[in-house]
Length: 296
Length: 270
Image (tube, rainbow over all chains, first blue to last red; front, side, top):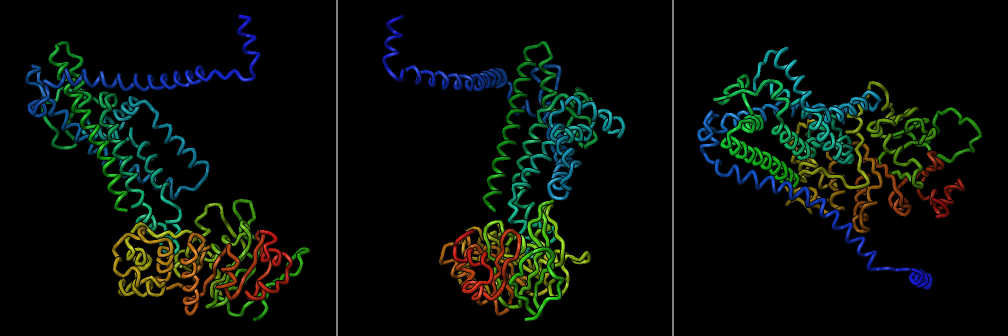
């Protein structure tokens, strides 16, 4: 003990390069391990689902209605329900979200009221989705008498993703350089002409990307749709927006809740379909963004 | 050259050396410009003569660009900017309530510091102003004419459909000048139009300005005193939001009346 201390006192710097390097290495590996936990868990989940669900994945599975016999059951009504719902969610939230973003970004006076509005929109993005379900049930299903329809579900989901659409659209519009606007004004374009012909076309790829990512959130939502009453045994595909419907996550939830192992495999297959839908939407967003950017 | 009928300056300001033109295209009277509560421009009165090049020089932050942008109400775009006093364009106050800023900007065009072509084709860049102003004649013909006047036609006539972003910086800036010329303005305001360009491209812009002065009035803001000396007929020296001295370029650069002007042009401050 004494000897070590004297040895240390004898040198001005106790460099200890090995030890210091080791500390860096330990930190690196800790971070790497943290990343691995996430990736490995995801991989385990995927492998498990693929192993369970792969046997059930078939054209018949995609093309059959739910049944009380696992071997005959399919996901057709849920798949179509999801496509209908997402389409109408997009149709409703796009004009509302982009319109609000244009107003807030371009026209709203820079005062406390606008700031309060913007802060609250950001807060709305954090409201639990079940709350939107309660709202949808009260407003769309009951007050507007839309019933448990695709339209009621889509309107509810549109409200849910509206904050995301508004915020991402605002960011896309804000990213258009001021010099472009000034150039437009400089040749005698009105504010609307400048927006319509210059700002919005440049912002469009960003707006579109935000929109698709918001819709891919809507596609996985379950709680608000259960709230408005989409949890039913549906053996048909919607023909009008006022028909009853179910969606993929609800169908998956339904199957998981059953005791028979056959239904659990169906649930896994359903999850694969849902994941494929999600990933293709995200891929579409990236492809569209890159392509539109290139054209400019 | 006559005398403006202006009230005497208040306070203890020393007498200023400011030229006044008869029948100016643009004229400011006691123009104050504020950003919020900060006064950026202090009671500037200046006249801009027709079909001449007038340069605004001065150190950074002297308010040259702010004054330039007041000439076509481009400051309206900045929410916190506001002004007092008058800016007259052919004798009419462009800040009068009945005046439409959009029409003002068609008559008084602008070229910016950094070339800012639209992410559109070369043709559409020049045609944009014609289209938004609902030009009734042959758009292609006007585009060609504007490009010829901007000395760009021969270089890009075979790639009118290509993106303007593919042009060199100097070409982009001449495209921006063509875009401004297309809507047939009376005045072209240039905010350091060559500061982002190399010396050769700068030379071409300066040559072009000399040609354009046959038909247009040009006001240029520049950091580059040699450039002002080369191109401008008249030069105004600004400092700290005030107009210090204004007169013929040669006089400003060879025998300025104000010692601050002399200090600036000889490089002793700024």
